[in-house]
Image (cartoon, rainbow, N blue to C red; front, side, top):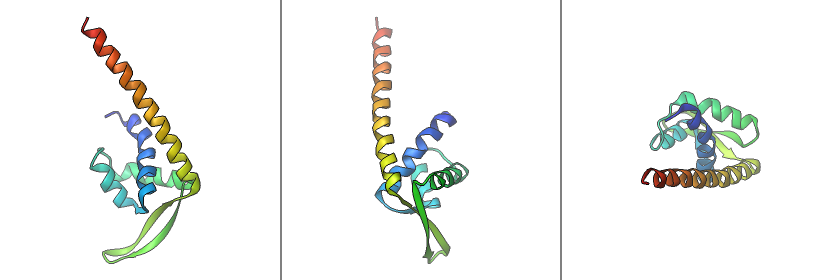
Length: 109
């Protein structure tokens, strides 16, 4: 998949996952990578940027498996942005699917 396209949708993926529950970085990487091929090097800069933009806050929580983990928690601004991006995504996908379907019909003529 095109790397620029992937980067564009990762923001929505991260916000959607944090909408369900607070997560730590490695957990986000693991869950997203089950559906989209990504690396930690892709997610952590995105997490920093989204935090700097005020979409979520962070807090530390002790872990029984090592050092404390940094969890990410959506802010009200993050929730609003997630809902806006989700609406835009569905509209975009609908438009792309329509174009693809029309192209497929044209090819059959």
